[in-house]
Image (cartoon, rainbow, N blue to C red; front, side, top):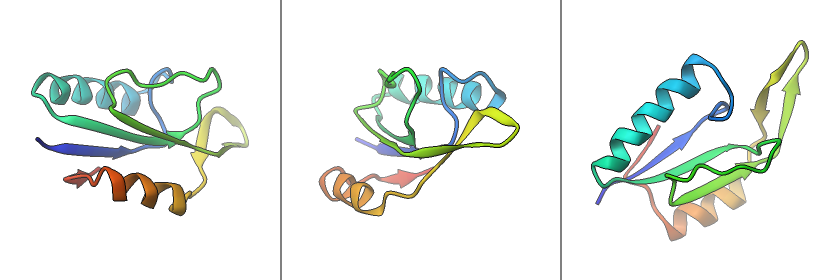
Amino acid sequence: MERIAFVSETWHPEINGVAHTLSHLCGQLAARGCELQLIRPATRDGSHEPRAQQELQVSGFRLPGYDSVQIGVPAPRRLMRLWRRYRPTVVY
């Protein structure tokens, strides 16, 4: 089984082209039996991606003038803990 990790600054419920494209891609990969990981900035509403078997939400900060865009802060220890336990086949 392929384990695919996505690292992204944007994801649903945000509404933009990147989030929309990644959502469709994840849907297709999940339908093919791939195990999905998601690394992204924490959501305001506490939501999680239901198709991801593992999800790491990191701290982030808002870009001045773009309140809807949040940039993730690196979390190397948390990320390495996740990847030691669930090593991905590929990272996007």
